Amino acid sequence: MVREHGTSARWRRRPEGANWGEFGPDDQLGRMNLVTAEARMEGIREVRTGRVFNLSLPLDYPGGNVLHPQRGAPLFSFAQRGEGFNYNYRLSASCPCFTDVVCDEAVTLFTQYSSQWDGLAHYGSMFDADGTGEKVPVYYNGYRGGVDIVGPGERSHDLGASRLGIENMSRTGVQARGVIVDLKRIYGEQRVSVGYDALMRAIESQKVEFGTADILCIYTGFADLLMEMNRVPDKERLENACAVLDGRDVKLLNWISDSKLTALCADNLAVEGYPARPGEGDAFPALPLHEHCLFKLGIHLGELWYFRQLVEALRVDGRSAFLLTAPPLNLPRAAGSPATPVASI
Ligand code: UVW
Figure 1 (spheres, rainbow, N blue to C red):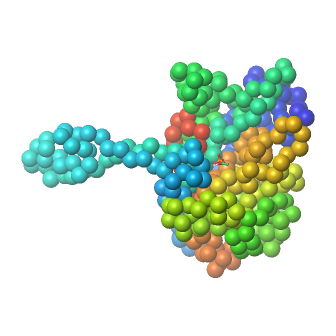
Figure 2: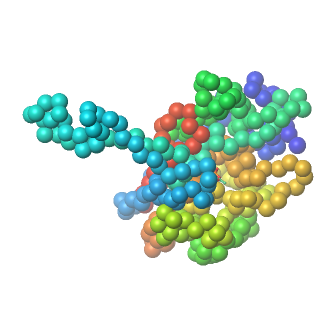
Figure 3: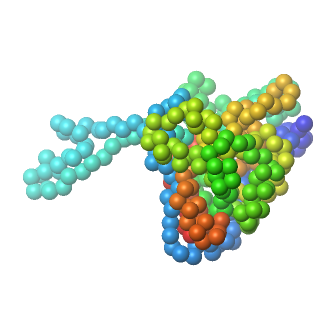
């Protein structure tokens, strides 16, 4: 089911439940638009003690590539300088009077290897946005694969996300009120699929109160296991550990639509369970929560964040809200970004 719309030159039809066009025909920010100065002040009012928590894993975690064969750990390289490298380089080489020593490096980073943001160009769907009967790769707000988001082999120039790139999110500063739900407290390290009912029970029992434009964080304990594994992840154990959201639960997806949450972040691999349980019909998304959030609603997803110390501190204080500051890299044309989110309480 789709809705005829026609307010945009880019698409004639939008998927059922999509908000395309609501933030303008050319919007590239999605729900981040809701983070106004007023909403930001709600976050700032949660800062009471001056304590801060870095919510990023070290970016060389999880380690290896067993969890995601296409993504590898950061790879360092060093530029030549003179006879050696620009590392422990003595500036006295250019003038004997100089006492300086410098280091510099280049790093190949898979943008979504470790703690990360999924940008709106990260995930699209095969969809008939033109009403011609032909399904083509489409992203949030009708932006097109092969046109706005271009991969190798599709065109030799303008590679990457010239629309929906992560730099759009970065420019907002990504500062908002964060709220966290502690699923580890309920389920420990059990792999459970958490749908609407279970999430609502957790939210109510932990007295998590949502404000306007909050970023919802889900603590499952998955990243704690990664830290314990010390860069040698045990794939089988991790695939069967800790809570994941049930992306196939329509009630959960509807709640996300109706809520005002601006982003959804978790300490696990994909926020939702992957692979999700089988869908209905001949064609369905493997990652239904990704489809719902990134493709239909423009809700960014944070993955592999690290919450343990924040959750412990909030628990002592009997709180679940904090100020979250989490800009991605201002890296034009990227579909995602490493993240160094900071919680202030
Ligand atoms: C998975 O790896 C399943 O999700 P993402 O591509 O969002 O990291």
